[in-house]
Length: 67
Image (tube, rainbow, N blue to C red; front, top):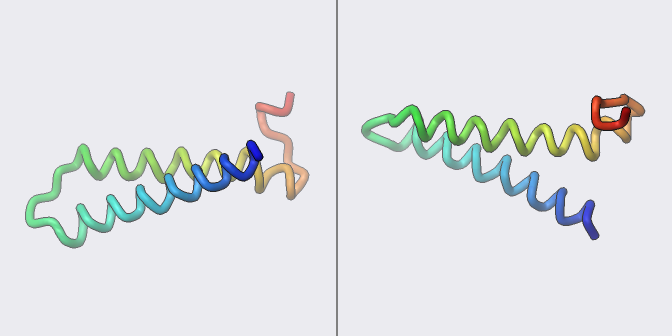
């Protein structure tokens, strides 16, 4: 159950961050860079969670959390 919740949360973070970036960069008249940085931070954190908890163990790669 924990893994499913983490998967849903990390995918939602990536999708929300990409939406935030696209909305700010493509559809806004004035680009506020703090929103761009926030979107990038959401995407990076979600990608890190996916990597550390799903992709790296599946590929047999040890992360610093495994030691």
